[in-house]
Image (cartoon, rainbow, N blue to C red; front, side):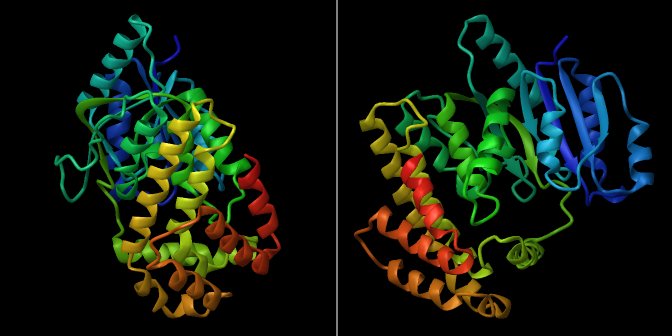
Amino acid sequence: MQPLLSIFTPTHYSDAKHYASLMNLIAIGEELKEVEVIISDNSGKIEKHNFLKNFEAKNVKIITGEMDDNYHFALKNTTGEYVLPCGDDDFVFSAGIAAILEQIKQDKASNNLKNGYTGVFCNKHSRLNDFFRIDGIGEDLISERVAGWIKCLPKGNPIFHSVMRRDSALQTWDFWFNQLPNPQAYQDQLATLYFVLLGSTSFVNQSYFMYEATNWGNVENMINSEIKYMLKSKSDNHAPLSYLILQRLELAVTGFFLIKSKRFDSPEDDKQKAATIWFLRWYELWKQQSIRFYMDIKVIKECPYFLDVLVVVDKYKNLTELSPNNILQDMADILQKFNNKGDEYLQFWHSV
């Protein structure tokens, strides 16, 4: 029988002292018979793979992942009707998963299937405190769906932390990796927005997920990792590192065009409301970011087109009247200088 839910996790950095999350997932696969667990190990460590293979069971699969894009590889190896992406340092509560499974079954029985489900989501600091609750998430109007999800986007990326229909998840990953003209390389918030626009989702009042429960890192490590990745990305024809400063502003603009695109069959009034909510909310968040903190990092100052980015930051920091088209043009101008992709980027968002 096809499992109702596949929980999949790519693992690379996790080692013996961080195996609690992986062992927890394996236990859930053994406990909940409607759940399939896929662990995709791309660490290249034979001893790690052999150790995990000892726990393989009917509902637990240990596979060797691809070095690049291990998330997508793991997703493609799932067979469940729904999927839940899970990091190898995240902790899943079996009671919460059981509650979501029960809700899915009830919705199936009443022919009211949702595109996705989420519940009370906690992080390692607040433990079981509810910091991820999203009110109004089940509304059908596109503007209200966007308004509901955008409240949680700054605190985490729901596409990694929610139960999704497998076909919608695959479609979203395809959009994210193969269709976006990706100056930031990983625009996961736009992927989340794409998923939300595909259909209605439902909230389950049950703790089910603890983010970074066994994380080895901290905020400083995360920033350093981000910088290292962006340094590498310069050689991969992605945006200059200094463009990192503009990421939130770029999300405000490109999300605006995505909502208003031909991809989604919704009344224009709803799309206009949703686009406005998205754009203004992200712009407000962008203004609150510690932009100057990044600007003072030596490695960023040394990056290509740092001064161009500085001009755009100063231009929009205090403006009260904004034009998404104007900001999009400024983004495209920087990309054009960097890799001659600016015109292509501009045309993409005017044509979706």
